[in-house]
Image (cartoon, rainbow, N blue to C red; front, side, top):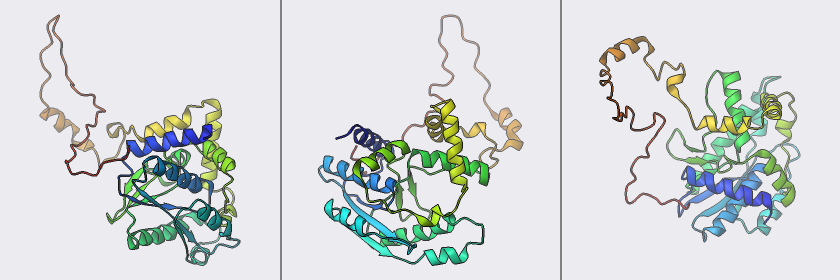
Length: 295
């Protein structure tokens, strides 16, 4: 086992444990796009499944969107050699994206929506309990910056998500993994990558500009990317300005209703105003029959 594979195994296992992503008996559908990220995710989950004595299932699902130049023959050979069950479903979403996107616009948004709809439908039809996507640490922090700069919102990609219709749970086990390690691992394993010609044909996409910005900042301070990831898990709503969370117009009334401060403590006595840190978030008690995590 190589050094980078050990590193990826560690961080994927940690993410699964931290967010209780996979439980015993889960049927995990890994969305294999043909890129380095999804190949890495599928390979690492396969190893973790073996280490867990096959306590969960993995299944590779690929959506052939009829993009020009698409050739999945090498992917099929790789999946069969790895003895991973799979299906490659053909749906011509490419023509829809080209037809509906205005000149000069980006394809990503519509392409993602169409792909997501097909993924959810397939998972529900075939009884898969988890949908695993290959987004990594850098994707998450880039999405945060893009959301702030281009959409005026503070949001990103959660490591574990319950869909709006409450029918699917989406997990991102690569949440702690750096793209540079995934690139190294993909080269090491010689994955049969299928390039995305649709997205690659557009230059100066917002995501590419954001990626370059983070890379430039990281050259000055290498801790910046990891600090951004930590920020996603250390949100302090009281320090923001969302009026949906705080009734700013009536804070004065809340102050008047608050209990008065206790008398000063005499010398030698100990005073604890806050027995728990303001940032503590105690876990909710779990029922005895709750599903048990693997890690």
